[in-house]
Length: 277
Image (cartoon, rainbow, N blue to C red):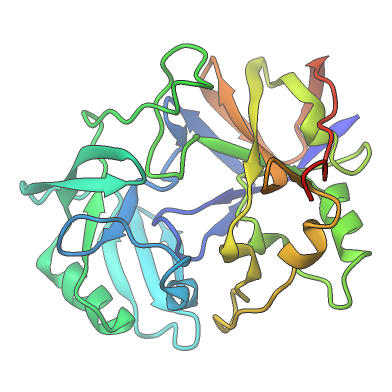
């Protein structure tokens, strides 16, 4: 039996997220998850891949406000609306996609530019903005927010435990930035999830998650190392990618919560790893 043990929301792409006990699954991901994003002055998205110090900025939702603050100095906070309405928009680029986004405010741009030491802008994805998931893996023209490609990502706690048993120094789950963490079963059971059900919501594992250098960034101090990619490459590599976690699409919307059971409806064959390693 699988059970949701943790749920995470990341309101601003590539900044620190936080854990919640329940979340509303919308048409493009968990409510408030990655609806905001930092871009450069040309509209190109910013992530920890290039700017590791983004990991040092933490988000929180308090009442109806989004709070952002440096992890080292919580008193220096920026307070934002969860539904900003500036009236100004711009084209933004995220991977191979381009879509319209709404500028949040000059004050937000100034705050983030100062904290990151570069000129940048904070943008919001309004409801009318449509960004479709990778059509090669789409089931029914699903849309997503400012996530990399898909609205949800799931990882089993047993998978992280397996990895940590191979590392000299264990790492926390925040290196992998999942939305759903579950307990029960064996390591990497998420690989096998073709069709699962949570609270009458049908979810589908469509693609294993290829991991990048963000997993090597310590989220408390922005330092980089070789792990865990070095170790994962030894047993989780296929087609020159290192995989950990699975990307999820779904049919219905609704509320999911920690403690909810995850029912495996259908499974798929295990991936053969390291054939190209």
